[in-house]
Image (cartoon, rainbow, N blue to C red; front, side):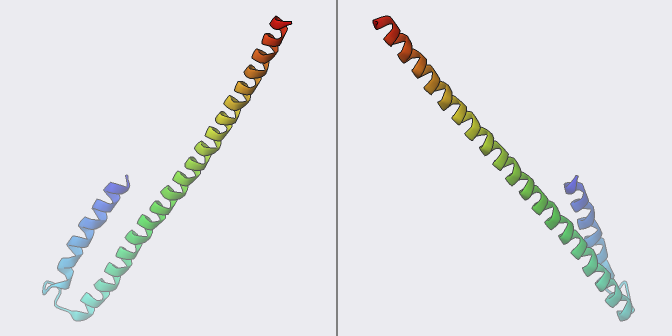
Length: 97
């Protein structure tokens, strides 16, 4: 979705560059168009930065959740191995006695 928005904004910026040529004879109009152009570019930049930050934070949260889950799984496996070793050891001592 963001890709399409960026393409639209890029197209609009290309179209607005013609406003800085002699097709707009009044310099004051070009000046006003220039400010509009800068504000338009600022909006594009702001939207892209916000999306990048949001995606980065979302990725970090997902990474932390996966890491926490993997640590829990490793702890459970370790606990199961310890329990099975205790059971195995108690079975061996019972069979020897």
